[in-house]
Image 1 (cartoon, rainbow, N blue to C red):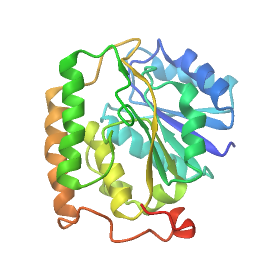
Image 2 (image 1 turned 60 degrees about the vertical axis):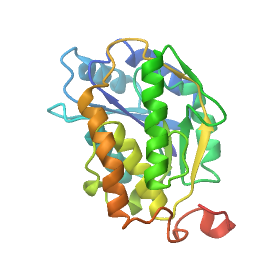
Image 3 (image 1 turned 135 degrees about the vertical axis):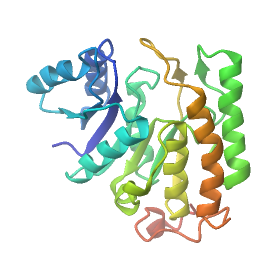
Image 4 (image 1 turned 180 degrees about the vertical axis):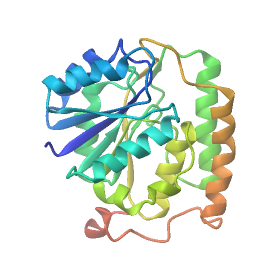
Length: 255
């Protein structure tokens, strides 16, 4: 077993899986891969089983129904916590997140508890998006910052590395959101607990194969989630202090 695990939800991603496994192995050989497949009708799960039979670093968690991105990640995180992984990544299966960036996120996680591969820190790094999609994403980031106070430039970003202590400290069964708001909820929960968040610039490329999962329901969920998070934090717009298990607790670094 390696020290890190990359959790990748899949639903009809058969075209991407073989190349993605090779790219992750090449970029970050110290990481295992866990695919969380929601019974893809295109045979993605069957293909992953075949790959896993030949590659001990590849694993697959089969789920009987399509239950959403957030539920897939929660299942993957719980699977990881049952094993001895110190660092748990999340990333998309469609190559919008470049596996070559995995080592940079892992390096940053030596000094932070949650590392976000950010499309917007230090500038905008998004390719192949129409202007309305970019404005929606940037607007959501500003909206989240203004309401919650969380100092993250890309709160909806889905390319992350968690230190094990973070996921162990969060009640994963209490995380209810499923779409892009899942990313906001996880980061905000970790931040409010007093864990240190950091952003690493990445280039985000619109998906190579298949169809985007964005829809109006996902947008509405994110719109209301930030208010729920503010209420949950009792209107606190900053953490009470540093979590005792945060890497910042021993270094004196602010969260």
